[in-house]
Length: 113
Image 1 (tube, rainbow, N blue to C red):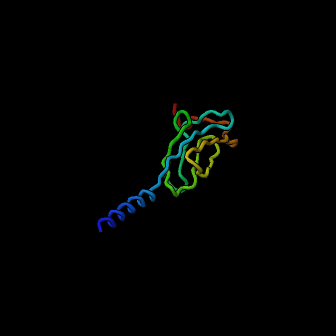
Image 2 (cartoon, one colour):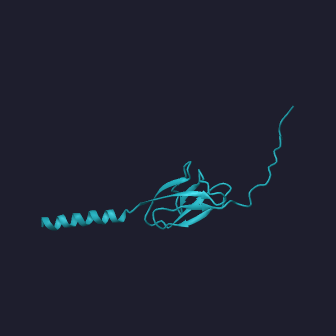
Image 3 (tube, rainbow, N blue to C red):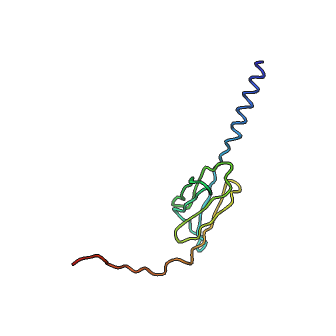
């Protein structure tokens, strides 16, 4: 009886660790135009609010649940990109958005003299 109980406990322990298989995804985000790393790029797991940002060198690290399929990369002035998770390292190249503002008009409305 003691042997069966030990085997059951061991099986339960192995099954619980197999269910919670979070993994860490790392990588670098660069610009397509000149290949420079992009700091502050938003990296979000699709369908969740879990995410992170790239550091000053364009690198990120994110804990991803086992059932997650895609990561979404967003940055101001660049097109958003959705990448399927394959492996533990995802290096991403973002393209600049050609629909960026070409000029800005500043007015001083509401100033009294």
